[in-house]
Image (cartoon, rainbow, N blue to C red):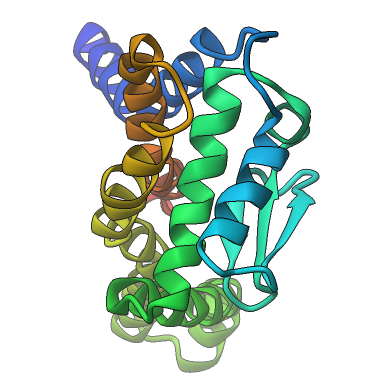
Length: 228
């Protein structure tokens, strides 16, 4: 029995952290500096945005947030390595985030839905956390296990919306990578680098899925606290 439990735990950890490790490994594999590249990730992003007529979209360093596009701030934000780097990873990630900026400019519906769902998920997660923390008090007042169970189930369902919000972004990410970024990259990098760029774009598309799996640990942590 202990061996089965260990195997189950190992399988869960592999499922949760495997995609994230694969994304990081793929990005790192193609992050070697390329002196032959004419510009950095930030410079390519700026060029692509200007070519698309999106001169109002800023290109900024992302800090601890990681590579992303902010529809609210109209900004492509890149990690320091990708902002200053001249590598396949840097230019591919830059093109991917520019792809999101183009989606935003064109009113791409899945991106709009993702933003709306992400905002709702943040609110839902806050409500879920409050409900979970309040459950001992509720149980002390009503002395009803049934009410406590219903409250906890509702809280876990609300917090689970964060996982759903990340998971439904996959079509939007693949569109940014392969319908937007890849055609742009074909004009600016050598064809020998395209297979590597395709791998990086695939990893960029799966970043949110990896985050969704890791966010499951938050729900599992609460389940362990309440011994469900």
